[in-house]
Image 1 (cartoon, one colour):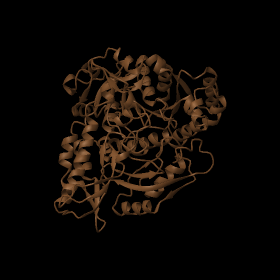
Image 2: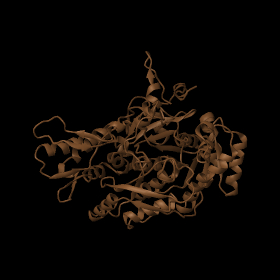
Image 3: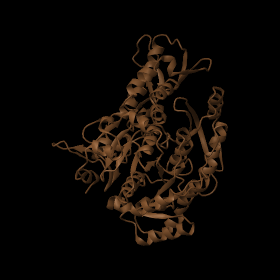
Image 4: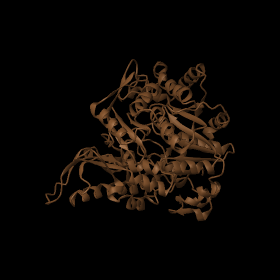
Length: 554
């Protein structure tokens, strides 16, 4: 059976019943049909003095193009904890339509461990990402409208981009205002994918409606001829944008196929944004559940680093344990095994590629000071010989591993992991630390992440990046955290350098201030904020029949 067939064959509980499992009353859920709901602001307010549950972060090794199953593992762990009698809850990101119609085809787990209703979540869900797209483009239209009617603020350079929640490389560079109207000002422009929009980051980092509005007003949108910054609040844009986002700010409640409550909210990419679900969702989940399973995008060098250095710092939280997802195929991939041979048994390839796993464990355990366990996400082609070899190699390093078979067995396939996690979260030794201090210069912060986490020899900055760093520091934003936009496939900034042997540098070609979100973005290598579709996109196989049933989402 396909994922969508498995999801359809499972009878879901009414969302009101799911809410009651974690103590949310019917009057505090705003229903979007039988199986989806928004959670009222009143819930957190009534629980904010309650002690937090245990926070479990799920991250991964550097992935192969199809991913290693972090969401699948996250759901399996949450279901597994319920299997052993624990009050667990999920706090995950929302899928973007870019990957749904691109290479992944969906992002709600797989097999017997899925969040549901999977078609709704993968498509329009409760409209959050559409609201973010509209708020982003409203600001863009207000900027150009202001310029059209005289440019009183003196825009000389516009830095705010339009966005769309699709992979469309044609929009990376565009010319706008070509109608030839008398007062219209043509200019070169660019599009981002919505999940890379600063507004997505703002929604995920805002603490409440008031904070959201203030952050929207603080968005840097351009510069005048004197080099002075112009902000969204100078256009009086933040009020209307907040109106568009007022419902999107509320976390969404759904369920797993085994009826574990799941809060799904926010969805920034981790390679081009900060890669975590919303602070509001995570903090709410910590009040509702005894064990909260959350996820950071892509490998631990990206998602986990940003989760810790940006989100944890802002929210005042830290993980009690980290699950590092690995797959045999990813280890072989980073050992130089060719894609068409990756499903064949290859002990030598595992031995060559296991360094990628070791480095992530070392970063999490010894750099960030966190309790780590490796989750081996089992695939049908994995052989017993390969699994035993990996277990032995990790045991030699003193690293605990749990074989997770959630895809085939549901929560039952994650009970071993659940038992081990309960013990791991009880370890009280506090060695937690960030990778840099906020007082460090922007350049120093980038260099610390690049050398300590990526293992780079050093960092090379373009002249324009150096100029932007100076300008940002002159504007008074030098103490913001950094969000490095880098390929997810490698510790380096070269997607083809999978094994990362020898010395390599990280090249920063551009720096961007995200004053509303509260961080500085450093663009490394050839990373794009508007992805493109693969040669054969998933969109080609997504369809709907005469009965209205969707096919092709997986």
